[in-house]
Length: 224
Image 1: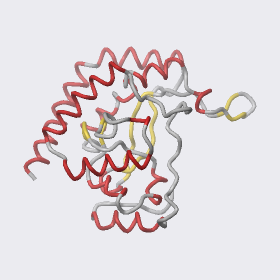
Image 2: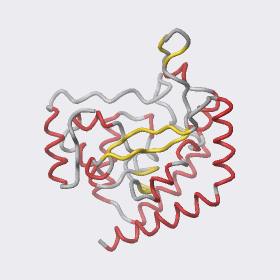
Image 3: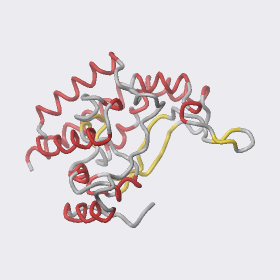
Image 4: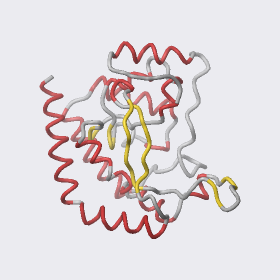
């Protein structure tokens, strides 16, 4: 409990300071996105948080609309702009997430918030990633990011859940800064973005939901 209280205090202070200090960068990036990609500047999407409870996550847009002209679908590679690639490489697209941290929906460090539709696809082991708040960065992000498989990513997420500490958070934050400058493992091999997660056929969908109920904090209202 004491560790959780300290972690939350650090999150609040860091989010407030970050939003103030980084305000000029936020304004410049917002203007660049508006000019290069268009409105809206922010990408908003509902993601599952602690215990699977949904919240609206904020990021800067890095991709154009999915359809173009006469409703012709475009691939992620076609939608990802040059500005978007730069923002992702520098992790600048994640800066609006500080607002989610300030609101208590996310933490600076934790498993990355993924799509709601994945909730029913997790194994009971993988679903444990929702036992802590999602983070702007995490253990999986400094150990391969998008260059590793989904299974390895979930394994690293659960390892963090079982071994979390303030010292580990500090190590992850420092390593994140280093990796941002190195710009490594931003995209999965042969993909512009991380390919969608597919369920392990050895487990049925309801197992993950049962596991989340045991956490005692999830509110999943069916497939979304």
